[in-house]
Image (cartoon, rainbow, N blue to C red):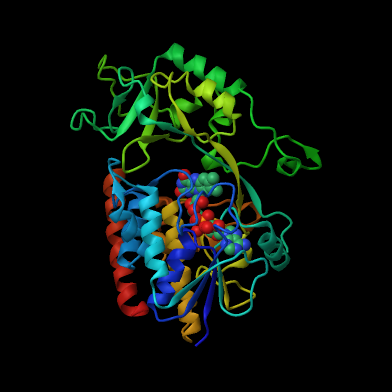
Length: 448
Ligand SMILES: Cc1cc2nc3c(=O)[nH]c(=O)nc-3n(C[C@H](O)[C@H](O)[C@H](O)COP(=O)(O)OP(=O)(O)OC[C@H]3O[C@@H](n4cnc5c(N)ncnc54)[C@H](O)[C@@H]3O)c2cc1C
């Protein structure tokens, strides 16, 4: 039986390796770290989370909660390791990132069917392959992928959020609460920094006029031959300073929305709020939720200390902008993640145009199962489109190729319900019930 080569030991590659190995296939997993690192990773561990430590909602009536439950049904290694490394985060599944990556690394390295090789791959190899090299795929491999896909451009830009030391947050101003639970759970999981209207506009002004890190020549977008001095950002992950400059109030509907929160110091809903989420098991670090940024580090220190409660904050990591490599999947892939031109070549993870940690775990899972089926002489199978995992992969394979942008799990991808429901929560539960039944049936009748 052929061996499976997997390029990239991130979220997708690690899950793919596990799934294929569990199905009896011999796997060679190539990971270039720690020999060669990326601009965002800091360790040589598999499945390192580079920014937020949250895998999203755990509620099954929410998209990421449903996807997590589907991955658990499919015996996901990474979801199991995440649950074992969980730290408090309200209804979300947040993890101690180091403990999570170590658990995945130990399980992968000790699997008898997996051999791990620490090496940068620069050419797409022959034989069954899954490319799961992520948003920061090394330049050598990007060239090889470009040759194969014929695409002129394979990337655009994302940004990541800063982290502060918990002991330097002024808790006489900031307060603990989880959104919508200020009455039932006064010791909520998030730290909230409340703004008055004046404070908010002063902050928004400082943010929009703060100095940004100058763009490198290749980062500047050219539209119709005209340099627009702006990189192509992913609209769902815009830097806060870009949002602040678009409209004075836009942040109050986005990362600074105050809904569902009351300041216990005056019992009022603040005008705006910055939320901070626990980042490590020891509870010493907190990240600024939704505060991806590309400001100069000195400007981040100056402007973010205008946030009430953070005037003396110590920044243990500043935000930064990063490249996001992805292929034009609707042109190249089937929803099995198999390429249309080479049956033994699969792609998985962020490079396919899937957003979100849990989405990328799911993508590795689907590619691992299908590549193993291919090697064992069975046909790769699309997953049912009334499940979150199936609908997400159906989307990336069938979206409009002209304006394809990466996609996150969301309920809008699922087929409409037969019976209309107005209540969003109730609708979510009905979608979830249908998806989990359908997946269970698929596992029993097709996968087993
Ligand atoms: C700076 C930054 C911040 C992010 N923040 C978030 C966030 O907050 N929330 C979120 O959901 N998503 C975030 N993302 C996206 C996140 O990367 C993905 O959700 C997830 O990690 C993608 O999984 P993946 O397996 O596709 O890629 P990765 O997890 O990045 O794994 C790819 C692996 O391939 C390796 N590799 C690359 N090229 C080669 C090569 N040529 N040979 C061998 N190995 C190679 C890399 O070292 C890496 O380990 C962020 C990404 C970046 C870069």
